[in-house]
Image 1 (cartoon, rainbow, N blue to C red):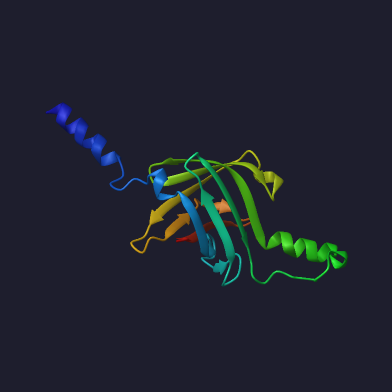
Image 2: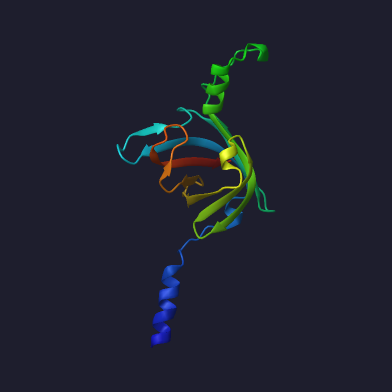
Length: 162
C-alpha cells in the first residue's frame, strides 16, 4: 500500500503535459512582449504594440533571438548617429545566443553572447505554455526590469513560422 502511495505521489509531481524540446524546434516570430510591474500592477509593451523579432531553436540544443521595436530611430546615415540615438537604439532591442535545455514546462537559455554584456554567462528561465492555437507563451519569474529597474514579470508570445 505504501509503495502504491509513493508511486502516486511521484506521478502527481510530474506535469501532465511536460514540454518536449521538439515543441520548440524551428523559428518563431514575436507577437508581443509585455511586462507587468509587481508593485503597481501596471502593464506595458516592452517593444511597442507591434514588435519585430524572432527566436530559433535547433535540434542540436542551440538557440538565437533578436527583437526590436518598430519605433526605432532611423537617421538614414551612420555618420548622423549621435550618442542619444545610439542609446535609444539599444533600449529598444534585445539579442542573444547560446544553448538551451528543457525541464518540465520551462526552457533555460544559457547565454554565450548578447547585446548586453551583463547577460553573458547567465541562464534565463522561461516558463512555457503551449496554447491550442500553437502559440508559445513565455513567462519569467519576477525579475528586475532592464528598462525600469523595477520588479516585474515579462510575458512574450511567439508564433511558429510555417
